[in-house]
Figure 1 (tube, one colour):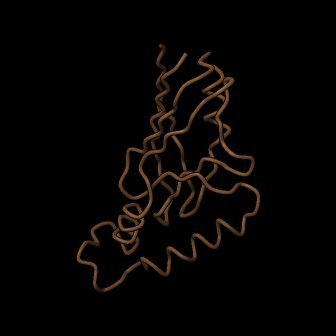
Figure 2: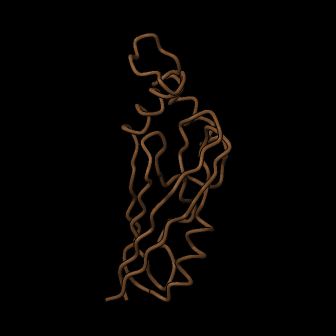
Length: 139
């Protein structure tokens, strides 16, 4: 059994879903591990990870609209607002999504479905610098 690990740094330009499947695939190919399980973990509390459709951009827009209604920025009921009006709403959105993903690997590639991609779901309005840990175990 082999293991490989790296940290990807992503720089989203603001709120949105940012596809980074290509970066994961490039790293995976360099590991030489053909079969196993890849775990991804984001090291922040105001963004998350998701696997989502990568064909129709309306899916991403609809998701952003849904979360804006569910956890609006600047809601006066929020007590926490130290980093601005999008801070607490970002934390709420993160609790409703995932900080980690597990994806099977076979034949040296991610076993995602045809229309699936790996996304950083940025919940803050401004530009950020995010770290995603990738840990692969397999043979």
